[in-house]
Image (tube, rainbow, N blue to C red; front, side):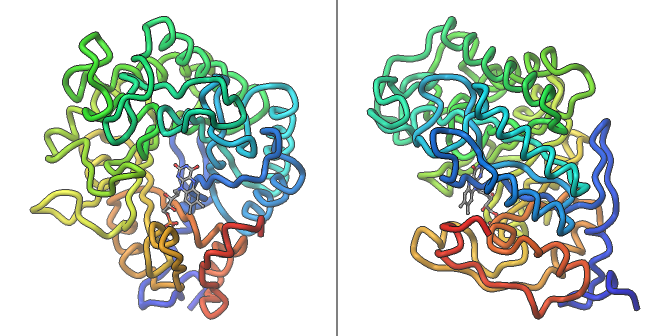
Length: 375
Ligand SMILES: Cc1cc2nc3c(=O)[nH]c(=O)nc-3n(C[C@H](O)[C@H](O)[C@H](O)COP(=O)(O)O)c2cc1C
């Protein structure tokens, strides 16, 4: 029996190590590093320590790295001076060094492009004078924090995403991921609680995708027809884990169809626990439904390789290594195509190599301390 046929369960890990291709995106295997914000970019510039951190994951067999959220060029995009920018010469040079290191190690990498919307507190660094912005100026509780965005302001933000896509291509990234999840700006347009607009950016669930559709189309124009575009979305919001955009498969389809038509190549379906059925009457998770409804490849995520979901860290708890059997069965069935791993890879750069080589006794627990170091 080869190492690939061994895992900590009876099921072979081989499906995780099959190559994958969609359009121009060719990956050595199915393991994706999930985007994880690290406050390690002083002044918004990712340095050599960040480049080494990502390079270690590529050296240890991660197929695709999605960077931490990195901010488009808009004054209210960030809520910390230590989150990396995706604009300005110094930050883009820093990212170019990250890309070079990952490519030298044989990996692939895409930046997660981010605007935090109204989750930003008034007066936040690095631009305390910039008011938080959102489709209707509402925060995630529905409270008013600013005026609704004007159409001109929306057009400027769309253009900033497109410029980031063009820059990503220019400095050698293998695609982009748009952060449309977790209650940040793009998701604030998706969610009825934060989008009360009565113009063409508001209305039905399908209408509320218009902002994202314009961003996808603008990124496509800026980076060309073959540049891979990933869209990350979620039902849950950072202040509300039971929130839903879509309550039924039919609603999910209404949401996804315009996004797929606009040019998304790969959907990254963010859940806390990958094994949970998304709707009654079927075992399919969110990535499974998304693949079935759009015909596009999907990435699943949520507690892969760990026995507790990431939200436990806010209560001070870590997580121990967990069996991969259920995940492997779903992957082998083709429910989804790729598997994103967050905390397990944050703590352990060698997670993928250990799984591949059957070194399961060497897998490490995730602790709260893990978030404080660039392992
Ligand atoms: C420290 C930390 C930072 C995160 N930052 C981001 C982020 O920048 N963008 C994002 O979409 N998700 C972010 N997430 C969510 C992860 O991408 C992932 O979806 C979540 O941790 C579940 O995967 P896991 O159970 O494998 O950790 C973050 C999670 C953690 C633990």
